Amino acid sequence: MTAEVIRCCFCGAEQGDVVVDLGQQPSCELFPARTDPGPDPTFPVRLWLCQACGLAQLTDHDDVPEEVAGLEPEALRTQRRESAGWLAGPNLIPTGGIVAEYDSPHGGSWLPQLREAGLVGRIAGTGEAADLVVDGCFGMMHAADQQAALRARAARLRPGGRLVVQFHSLAAILRLRQWNAVRLGHLAYYSTPAMVEMLARVGLSAVAARDFSLYGGTVTLVASRAGADHHGSVEKLCRYERLIGVRDPARVHALQEDVHSGAEALVDTLRQARARGEIVLGYGAASRAVPLLVLAGIDADLLPVVADASPAKQNCRMPGTDIPVVTPEELTRRRPDTVLLFVPDLLDELRRVLPEIESCGGQWLPV
Image (cartoon, rainbow, N blue to C red; front, side):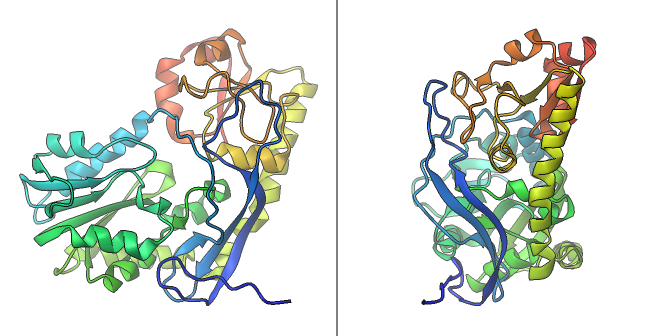
């Protein structure tokens, strides 16, 4: 039998390791109608770490059906505002220049926050070179050809221009054991050392980087065709992430141990709550909730509903399960004892917009 050959979607190297295997998973962004009995189509989800450039990536790039319909959390806008404020600092980004933004399938835009920070003179036309090129809202991680995607962004830079990329760092995924951040459609998982290597291969130097709290560790990184590391921020973050183990296959593979233990722990929590006669519901029909619920085998018997503010997801069901997606109003009407929060970054926002949960004696439980 011929051995499977996996090639890096950035550098083309064949040397690497499958570090996480989530088996067959349904699309995380295609929510079937509540009346659709399924079964839903599934696809293999395996994370592979390239030994050459350090990029973590999905081994299989199937044409996964998606119909992105989520609402952007306040936490994402807050992070962009904080990033824009940092970018407006001394010697980082030319002010009032031409700005080009690469869109993301998830929507959202940096432009309002960049305008607030005084970094936008005008928006670049289609294909026009720019002083500031922004990979908007985790856009590049969806590209099957990572090198082509990065070269396209680099090619848009005017002399002296800056490229800004944002990514949920592999270091945060390892540190917080966020194995369910690995999902269909998100093909690449960057660490800061890997991103620095990738940028160098397309002729760019990383000149500044900062780690923000979104998702436990989201990096905003600035690059240019020439320039030195701004106050050593890039090297400092690279050293930290190497200590976490982002280039070590064994350290990344340790996530596999959390896959089944995390799923089993959630099942135990739900069964114990049911035995006590408690009502446990969910909030956040998010992509990261899908592999967790599917691998745990959780159905509507254990988790009757998951609420979400996106009208497009309401009256659907969670992919791969029979759990219906309902409105936030339906969630509060049921007066749950506990609400499993599948996107912990939403906690502060939800406490403000759904105070009834806690005022009626319930609690939010981030998972």
